[in-house]
Image (cartoon, one colour):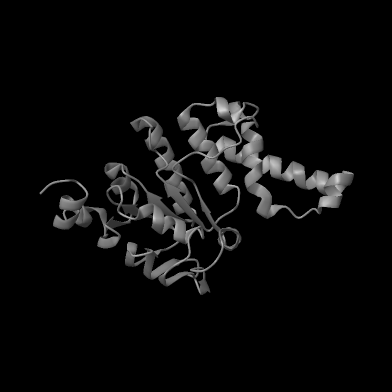
Length: 254
């Protein structure tokens, strides 16, 4: 496995007497998009929250390469190079689009608080560099013309883009995309899909959690399917979509 592969081994989460995720194992290697699908209540959000450090494991192991993360806090997971977006958009609505993206660059800041307070040249140079990087992200996502616009005044689809840019600003090795095209039309979804494919082609590991099955099937090299907390299928899209358990559990066909 490549060194930046995220590996889930026997991952389990119990809440009291209820097992939300049970014995889930799969890998998310760099350089490709890995899919995670399943009906509502399948355990997808619980699994993503364990990867992101919001929830700790009841059993099993999560590793990024050789680094164990199963009991790590969310800030430790972020510093390890894992970034995420959320089902519910979390932006600073009154702040500009550019400033929202700049929030994501906190991991790259090197100037001290005192240098910033005193306005030292080193702080100016760093601020200018990070603003240039933020503008590059805006250009990549076709959002340059909204740089000074309040994020809360954008359309839903554009707010989604801002959230993704902020996640990418942390310079992650792994990006968790939690229903990134929910509520978007086919054209908007296709444009973002091309961006996600470009990230993977550039060497990033991407985990895509989505209800849009054709979208996932088009982008992902491998799809993992959860149902009632258990992994019921893993493999290439053409195999998974023909799996009888997947058809019954996810597509609702008896």
